[in-house]
Figure 1 (cartoon, rainbow, N blue to C red):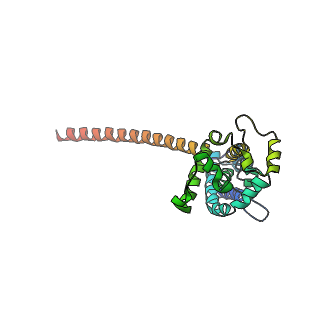
Figure 2 (tube, rainbow, N blue to C red; figure 1 turned 90 degrees about the horizontal axis):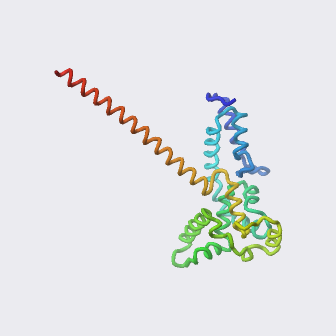
Figure 3 (spheres, rainbow, N blue to C red; figure 1 turned 45 degrees about the vertical axis):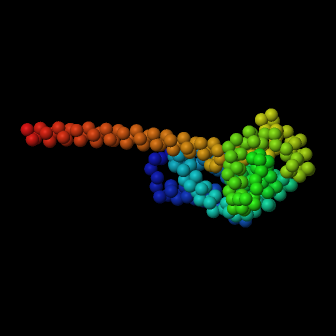
Length: 249
């Protein structure tokens, strides 16, 4: 049974639960994928066991997630060479690396995409770039922007990507023989990026769309409420004017 009244003890339980998810130590890293405690079903079970509404728990954990991502992203980006080696040479998937490093699968996929062979994938997709003309800082922004564009429609850009240009031959052979590919994602890179997007709980194109729709819905609700309030106030003002006119007669 979920209570609508939250005691101090309940709040402390919620905080302890959040801490248990995002704690980082030498032996523990957060699981930010849908297979962990941030997954919908597990979060529903947690909301019941804690005795709090699902929406409240979800909102609280989303806030913790945002703060955590802001704190660790710089460090993860600085280790991109190690992440690329784990992906291209050691054979781990993007989701594997996200689990291993305690990071967002979507952001890990975006970083890897932007940095494969110094951005060669994005240069190929979007027709090249003269770094000399825009400088290193401009190039970094360009790669981040184009990486986001690709992840909005991965199949459109990478379904037929030539994986042999980026993967270690042994890794490529093993992944091709694993049976993971299908007609909608004949590229390993495409498959892995889609898997990373699907595994992410709070970040990615689908979540962006959901937040935009929620924002639009809230704006419409607010507009409706304001209109109703204004109508009531106008009606009251009209009645007050009528009463003043009568008192003057």
